[in-house]
Length: 288
Image (spheres, rainbow, N blue to C red):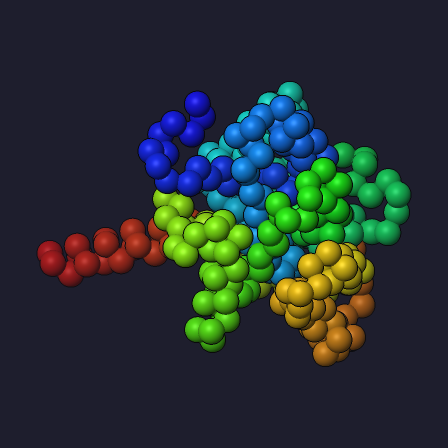
């Protein structure tokens, strides 16, 4: 009934929340598999992106929410919205803290707390930087899904393949998607790649390197999981996720919670709209 409007097109339910909320969503979907013949035909696709770039894009999205440009529930699954509704006031307060830190150049402290090596990481209060970072812990999320679903029902795609400069790489990525869905071409009724292409912003070396050091082990665990589960699909773009660290990009950066971060006065979308408005006014003045 939820997909009656699809009218012959493959029904698609898409949100990044399904990976992040793996402990809630995966068991529910597994229960549905066990009780519904229809859902036995469901295929699950995980589209992952280099976690530091994804982090910078996620932080810019939070700025858009602070700027009032994005509905707080946009892209959230129903279960996730219902869970969040109970602490909406706290969420708004912590988003204000995060946006204030980004605009004031003090993001380093929040990111340092979100990436510290401690069992109670982020337990003191709901640090939205923690949430933005935890979205990139793909190995833990995929392992949870694989506990409930057979690997044949789960396809892991890399965003980098779909935006690669080489046409052959992009073609292979789409062919992999089509083969998984059992079709030569698929009209999904939406652009699943475009929905994930929010550009990453420059974080500044202090914040970037703090995040890269945190993600090093999770990235290694991701590669091990992919090789173990889908060995025929190797090599994987995620094998290059730690290249910046290996190249020594962060060797001279000393971690400090007090270091200033690059201030972001507004989201990129707000800056674009302001520039558009200024250009419109300038053109109007010229006409006068």
